[in-house]
Length: 110
Image 1: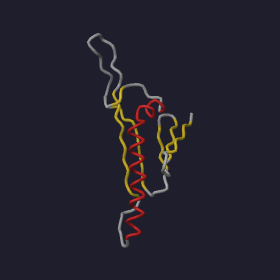
Image 2 (image 1 turned 90 degrees about the vertical axis):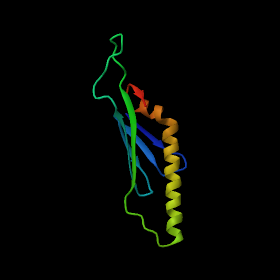
Image 3 (image 1 turned 180 degrees about the horizontal axis):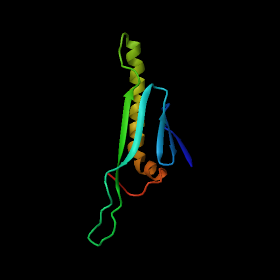
Image 4 (image 1 turned 120 degrees about the vertical axis):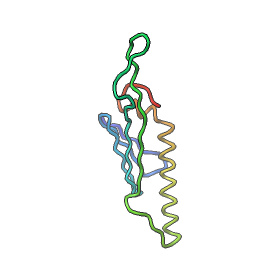
């Protein structure tokens, strides 16, 4: 199942297919996001029930090319890109649980 999410106010789009998240954008940043299982193996609680696995969200955003400025115009453009990145991170922070559920993962989020 394909879930496509446009981040409001940005050129950033998330596509979720079979627990994989692909991020596309028009601001020349390499963006990766994955829910990682924090537990190497399932553990049991005092009653012998299996604990839900614990996941954390790993996000990496890096410029595709080294940033160098020669004019104020370049800085303004980068400022717009950073504004998009800020909106992206705020959206993810506010919707982390929904994205986790859309990935079809079961467990707890840290």
